[in-house]
Image (cartoon, rainbow over all chains, first blue to last red; front, side):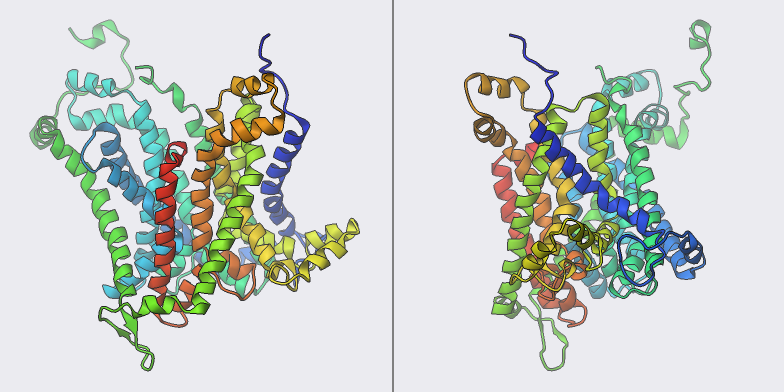
Length: 271
Length: 322
């Protein structure tokens, strides 16, 4: 008897899986509705009325813009640092076997495997011991450290699928190391780096736990939001910012998925 | 013979002539001595992570062996185990026990909710549905952590959507009954352990789904069919075939759900009671109380617990499922 591959799932499983996915998505969708509510003081449901006025109010709030600007600058620089460090590390780990290779992969993963509060307080106590005052750069220092892993993961996966014989061929044809990197390696790993970079950006843009320990008076968007959650000033503005944050982080994720989706058809992957 | 003679000229030649000079010399050097190249590649990331991260961890660890002068509030930089002694006071042990219990419950619940999603995605979803399931897990995983917590604040608040829904269903008595229970109840769901628990499960759930799905994808479908051909009920197949094979994936996922719950301080702060979790204790000790040594000693607890956890998980083969 042939096995029925096309067999459909039992009803119970379908329902459970669908409920699980709804559980994951409904709360996020709810934020979108709340961004338009006319209710100012409480979280009343259903919204008594709908309005777009809060977008204008948010637009005119300088503190929101300052937080946004800081978040974008921190994320951009952290991503740049992570791209360099993560790619170097991935190239070394995936190309050669050497003593301590496992330790290095552990070292890269550790900042994200241990709870964020440990990274945060560790950095803070190190800054205190070394008398480093809080600044833009102390935030970047923390963010770049845990962003490395995202770039590293993407780059390592791509390096493993890229055939080493292409590099040898390039060298055989007379290219020097830099030319090989520029014309052979880089085009092959470019989309993986772009995807990793975007995920790193999203990760940094969203990070709150480490940032609370490494920021002085400055507010990134998540810190601003945390402040609003604990001591709300104007609830609808928080709703609007929350919706914008969802959109700002989701678009890079979709794009990163699109970039790495066809990764299996990379030239030379057939070996 | 030139390449151009036989092939249409590409927009940019893939291989350029060697430039010689400094660059060429450097390139030749790396070619002859690959170890040097390896060293140059590893040096920046290892220095960064070693100094910034591991250095900070040691700074933190060192602090846990200092103590605080109770009268002046100054930190006494002399080796002592006194701070670790403070950790074993009843109030602090209470915090540790509460956090570990919550982490275990959250892990268990995540596994139960994650399994059907992961199983459906691994066994039945094909083509476009598969992509949809993947994105359906990735989008919540990557969307803003604070926004997710905020969304649940809206849902769980007294005047929020959940109360409204239960009122429509004439089930408010159920909510009130639950909230009147000791420990898990409270004034409203947004200030109760139940609320904290729900939000923890929600926020970490994708971390459980992905490894379980990865583990289940390696289970050949005909294994399940063979089991039912041999007369096993679906329940027996689950217990004796699927579950043991998915277990490494569940353990891999539990590393995240457990570790993240141990260290989180924002969820119980925003949705929870005034009874503290480890993360909150660390935060308040280093902030308002100014007792960095005790905060550092507190962070050692999750590190030690996770150390044992990772060791056990590795023995169960969970790392292969990551």
